[in-house]
Length: 124
Image: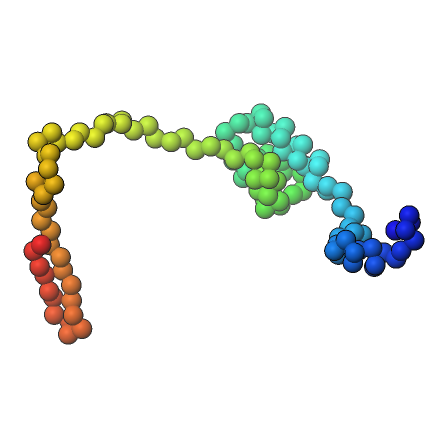
């Protein structure tokens, strides 16, 4: 704008940028100290979730809502991983006797009810 001596409105229109975006000034992070305190407590207690960490922060004197701690906890990627159950993996055995199509069949009951409400059951 200074180099070409044009107005802000015209320059933003040429670049297809909203004037509010051009004028935007980011706010300072108000949660920086809380974020550091949360990391310190989380490193001391690795298996604690956000609620227990929040309780420890309140005991330390922080006046903070649990929802704010949860938001920071998720934003920092501190989620406690849940342990997955170990299951025995068994290989699927194929029946060696089945070598052609139409060699094995299955049977099943199918039930339905028409608008009259009477039960209809077939053996397929």
